[in-house]
Image (cartoon, rainbow, N blue to C red; front, top):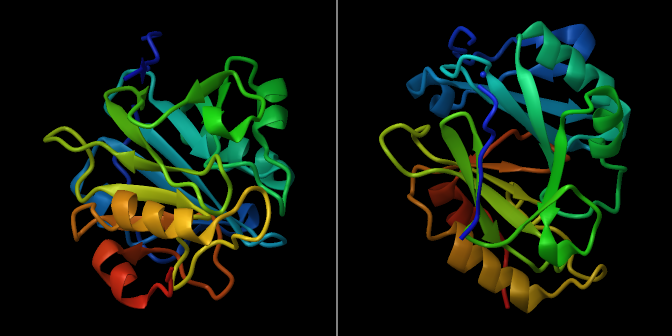
Length: 243
């Protein structure tokens, strides 16, 4: 098992989510995630790119001196918006990570790296894509004292992974899972291209996501109907994934 930890020594006031926009001109908003409410050290923002209906997630360790942060599934068209928010919150962006190779938009990882040269890109080794760091199942990605666990969830593509916040007294509770296109809200990603397999997706979702604690909050890479998140228990009842 590999652990990716940022060693350069990184505050921010704790963020308590609410339903109103934090900055309408930036297109970003908060969610009702109780993870952030119950974990004063976690900074969390959910951001939306309307053309591809893609969610980008910003997470940071508020307790660490330099407030290290990461972006999950950034989009090239909204990279400037995301970086402006990082600066506004006084965070130090260290990683731009992807759940898989996206077919409906261009990742913002490369553009972000040109503007923030210290940022490292991350993607799964199985994706056969380009990145600075390749992760495999069981790896941990640290930003400050908070970490994301890597779980392989192929089926939409061969290289899909789900990033799950850690389990422990110093980690955000309830846990949060960033499922990419493997599991959407009341649905799942398509399986007819990029090495997709409905059988693999079924096994991935049931073994790697539905086995998480019932109160786990699930955050997808896309939504087309205005939903922002779902609970693991709700997902089991409403997701039409069959063999």
